[in-house]
Length: 324
Image (cartoon, rainbow, N blue to C red; front, side, top):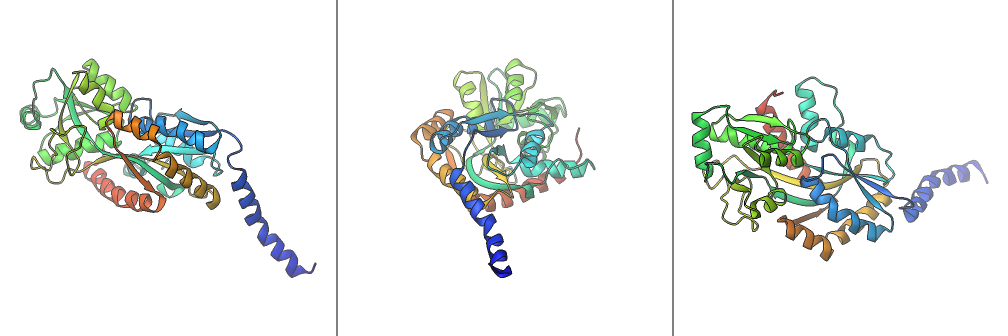
């Protein structure tokens, strides 16, 4: 074998090893990081998806709720640093793109960059909804706005953390309505939901699936919808655009990501598996019951969606400015 043959053989080795690795994948259990506590939109997305993915791939898919840092930054960063071998995935929210910008805003070390991630599949894309306790005096969004104008900074709302999806949604609404609210951050949507149910805060922006059980039980009332159109699970709730707040549009999407350097054959295997997962009757039923509709997108469409949505959210964060 001459030198050229050796070089050709060496060049082929990564392709062969990558192909063999993909054929063997997965050889062990997979961890799906959810960068929030249980009870929020990312967790709601992960719980039906993980067992369905497990059935297709033949190995356990373990949901790891790794909260911390506000808005999901700790879990997102952990996934970014993980070995790009397909054994650490991330089910996260639209705040993925917002949090690095918040770090820059405060001149903090950036925990991770969006460029470190590869979109695999979008799972959900629900509009955020404004909810208050059923016992609250506000029957409509206009009631809420009028009271907030009389008492600037006195009505409290909970969020999943500074610059998280729920925080940005509420500040977008407050800015459009010309009101000032008092932000009370928590470590995720689940704790924020607990806070409004216990009376610790007076309002919350959250996903339909998070709110529906509480609304059905008569504990919460939904006043407004941040989406561009009404949704089937809350057909009587008007959009903020209908109410005259034309620049309020916010979605709390959840999607599956891997590291940007994940080998293409493994990424393709995960995309194929997620395409099957998102047509699984069990998964569809779970989301329908929760009040969230499947909003599946494969990687190319999802990547384009993330780019457009992220640009809009980053603009909103810069408008919010520094908040503690």
